[in-house]
Image 1: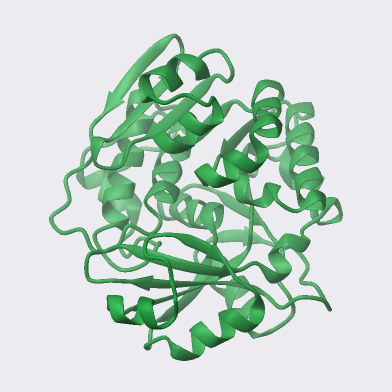
Image 2 (image 1 turned 180 degrees about the vertical axis):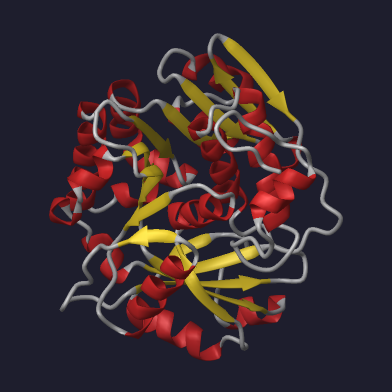
Length: 338
């Protein structure tokens, strides 16, 4: 087996997150659906961006957030995703590398501009997103680094990237490369509407390649077209080695090794912004998996990481997650968090 250089290599939409606080009147003025993620074209993205209050710009995208969270825990993270050689593409590359994540996907020299997600957070902590995918969906098989995939314990795939046909082929090839190298594959379903679009393909990918599945309750219920979460639990059994299913304030349920673990949500003093909760849950969970923790501990690590990120603005931890976990007494076999 190739020498292990990374704990997790994540592949997904490379997006610059632009976050700002605003009230409901702003959503009404710009015809933004509250609490939803809406795909927009470049012109509409520019109009919304021009009207947004001052905020922050940071490298984003679901599994990119996970990679940054894993690096904050002290893990070895890498990322693949496409940007354009423009200003926002430069922001993305600099920011994710500064967070400790290996990133070497060559930027596009032409074509659509870099992707951006315009996130408006209202006083009730709801996030309303308008996303222009731009260069991100140009990711293709030619952007894959087979050596890096072979050197990662887990290759983590983002369901959102299944929409463009060439990107879908790239994810499937990445999964095959990982399995050929004797490595594990993880998948996040990303969104219930994404599952509706790709249900059969996701089921096939899970059955043939995926070792670790991440989904929230709406996504896993959509995957197996059932009306109750308990029915989804029964349906997912046997299709992958591990399923980590999140339930917002009700915590998560982890299936694997013939066991079911119910993980409580970590208490939060103040809910500020739910952006990135699922992404950071995956970071904690994958850190545990790649450092010898049992599944219950993996779920608890995910719960703590998710609670930390929703207690302030944005999808990235503002404190070192390694120190946070150490303060809470977490210890795993390969890396002592103390």
